[in-house]
Length: 135
Image (cartoon, rainbow, N blue to C red):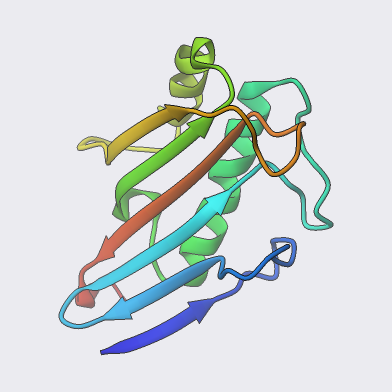
């Protein structure tokens, strides 16, 4: 088994003990993407009080780290979304629809009471499965 950490120069440095993405190879490649919140490369919150902007930023950053790992958004097979308010459900899915083709990834969405920063409205983590011949 081979484990590789992927780091994108397009993203801010992790603020804790975690990797932006981990790849596990053999026989298929699995990429485990850590929970992303809406931050720019400098670590500033993007889209304060705007769930659509935050969701778009999180998914764009997720796309960047998957590209570093040789994958695409359509390789995502499982997502977990943590949100501050379940009333934002429809707005979040409006944005998500722009990033995925069918079949959509399996997904769980959970309402939580707190995030790392009070300005964050959403955090998303994912697992991508890539066929060896995709590289």
